Image 1 (cartoon, helix red, strand yellow):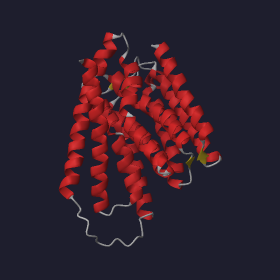
Image 2: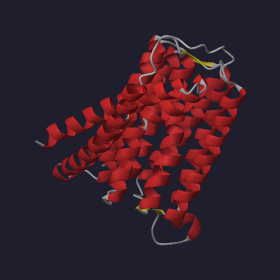
Image 3: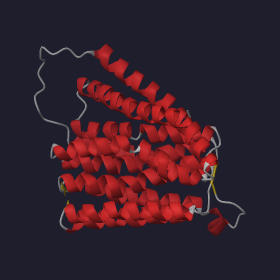
Image 4: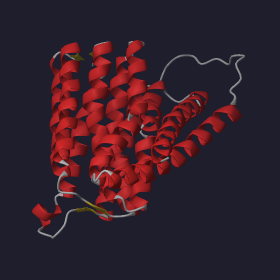
Length: 317
């Protein structure tokens, strides 16, 4: 029954995120918000709502391993497997200056996380924690990122002449989709955390390993689906922007909010994973800067890197 409830939780997370993105995007369009702003905020943050829900619920229930492992594991999955598969379907052309600036911001967020969890090394205390003050620092970085995005969106507002059409705005439907999707995400997140933790104990797995694997992959499915769909439609900016924006959201908002609610003790093993996340972000930056595209060869390399990483952390457990 635990496995069934886990699958139900994932289904609610994925479908809930789908409805949330659809509803909130429609509302934004009705309000004539810039398409750039929609792509970089609502789509990226909407697909990351499962990670946010799972990590925040895990923090409330004092499952720090799941909360931190979910974020780090999701980001590694996004950079390697999601980018890799997306590039295999259709090479990602990196030509939007906003996206090229966001990748360094992702790197900055990753390095900031590494510094904040290094309490033993930097502050000479007995244990590593993501404290409430650390959470506030991450949320401050997130506020700066949002300001940057809104400034970019304001400067690049669509100049199209928006005329009224016969199409109804369907406000009630969009609001229902948004609220219903959010409710499904919250309920699904609770199911995932509780049942994934039960499985962890049953198999002798650590909470951190479950967060890095089962939970991370499950909550990253919306990013995978969104980016693959964008790749088929040859919308490179959306595909890569979704991944990069999601990673920024995961580190700065998700861990920031989770640790503000409840300080998160850090498993020593997670330092390797955070370091790998930083290295992979640098590799993604190099791929995007060299030829301004992430081709099939780079995609294969990234996908293989994720498979090797999964094998390693399972053995490490």
